[in-house]
Length: 226
Image (tube, rainbow, N blue to C red; front, side, top):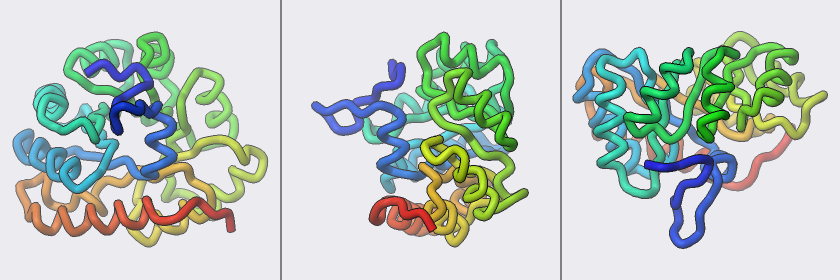
């Protein structure tokens, strides 16, 4: 899958990664000990209209999950790699079919992703780190761990940086997602509150219901500052 900041989510019109992020406002995070369950989780999320699904590299056989998922999801979903720390991580994940990268911090993986032409969400917490992430070429800033400061911290961070695309990640549940989006987050990254026990072989019907709720919330209306 050759994304390189573009993916034909709505042929014949191709959206950039940033446009998909702004339009869908949701990135799902999949990590777990069971690769088959992780794959089923990714495919279920894709079926429910989640356009951006990240598979963390600390998932068991993460590259295998990415490879299989990238081959099986439809054109409406782009599989990415998370917990990307090194240049080797970027190379291996890209070879497996990951179309975008997510880092927990400002590491060599950010520059490596940019060199490879891959969209990257770069992890940052402080204003200095957020500015550094953007200067390094990150498409958006992954505010992590967002739970440390909550929506109020996002609002304070956006005061000096109103145009910075920020994606809160870490402890974001449905109610939190609504508050972050209201405070100007370009999107939210959601793990266990969305994925639940599906990555452990749990209920896929319940996963579908949660996915529908998150997709409906994140796709409703436009962002409003408050």
